Image 1 (cartoon, one colour):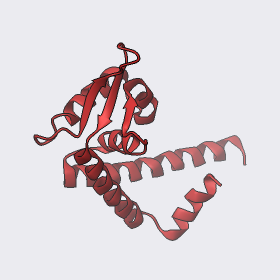
Image 2 (tube, rainbow, N blue to C red):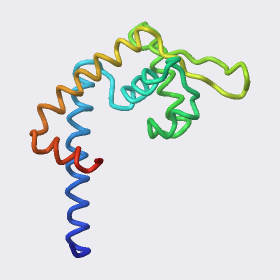
Image 3 (cartoon, rainbow, N blue to C red):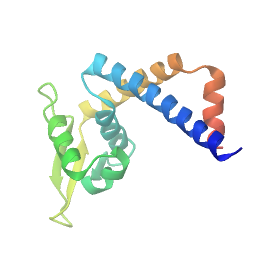
Image 4 (cartoon, rainbow, N blue to C red):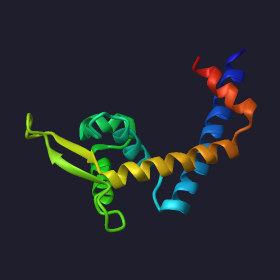
Length: 137
């Protein structure tokens, strides 16, 4: 593959990714009035044994700046009158902030994941899914 073909393939991959991401974000906004970043926050917290992570450890996973993630956590503390997450001060390091997932937040993360799986299944053919899996095998 020459350089031009490689770059063209890269462009097509990013367009494909953007299309899927927009479809997932649209589905989340339509159903829950939340976006993909809110899902990422809830999802990564739900994956931990304690349903808790340091704010600084969430930064690379969610892909936001520190201030943007802090604002996101604030919004999730007040979602529809419920607290999906809660900030706590780390007892071992008072400078560190932990984010704790509530039961409501965990339930919502499961509902959002189900919706995203359905959205992806509607957007992708079996051939597409196998090609994507093949990239990471």
